[in-house]
Amino acid sequence: MIEITETDALSRVAAYCSTAEHCRAEVTEKLQRWGIPYDAIDRIINRLEQEKYIDEERFCRAFIHDKYRFAKWGKIKIGQALQLKKIPQSVFYRYLNEIDEDEYLAVLDNLLAVKRKSVHAENEYELNNKLVRFALSRGFEMKDIRHCITLSDENDELE
Image (cartoon, rainbow, N blue to C red; front, side, top):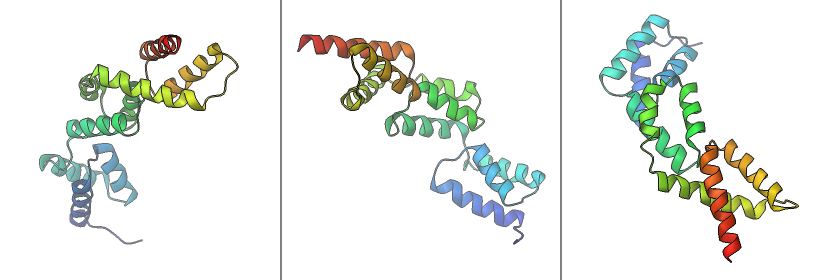
């Protein structure tokens, strides 16, 4: 195994952080895999934070935006993923609540409408149960799921 110096590790990780947003936990894990001593990891992480290569709040905003817009995750699933990345709830909670409520419900409604077409159910009750389980697995809250399913049921009756 090739020995990596602290300076070399710092420059490699700085390059890694400059290509995309990364959190403290991701960078620490990478340095640990490289076999960097813990005291050196602390120095490297602190330097990266001072030079703004790592910024937990900026990471949260980007992560929430990407998971919500592109992966179509709900707030619960995004929050759990951020906790797995060792981001404190006090840091990410504010950004989760900045998501526009109407846009959030539109994303959920669209997800449910697409899923509704591919779900096989014997009756409306079974269909709605399957849709609820699907939306819960995507990390959406029950109150929002009920809101969207009720709306789509009302729209079906109007047609």
